[in-house]
Length: 179
Image (cartoon, rainbow, N blue to C red; front, top):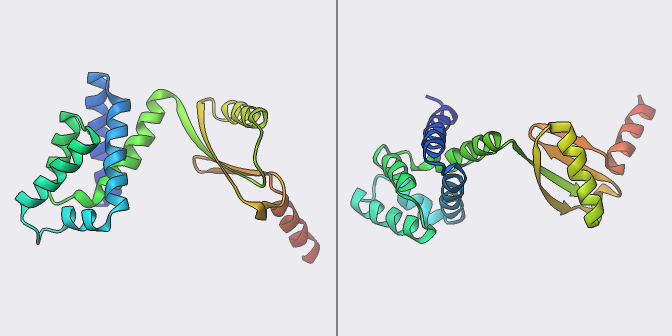
């Protein structure tokens, strides 16, 4: 079985429970926090995913991490199931899938914007409004800077990339002139 489809099933189960209890957003945050903890600590990742460590030790470690992030009973139950089935390595995939599903439920989309220079608050608002018109969803935007763009912005919304950078325009012009 493909890891992605397994992760989607766990994420779907969490989403369904969250919808029933009105906790979809908090479950998404909890699983994302656990995923960040696992991804940022190779030792934690190795300990939780390696069956060479006694299960009781791994359960104690997992419980400590979940207590530290303030996880709900639902998150604790699902992660205990993942640990029991030796599937802790898919927690980051479950977190990504759950985040996507929660955003979809909320009518929200995430945009990653790269600009050549800092964007003014007004420019950010215009960009958010434009992306909301394109997607029909509420946009949560993260912005980073990359001077190599020369000028303009690149916006990634889901699988779609809108490249309005001068660098891209120059590359297209060069390709046209050399062919």
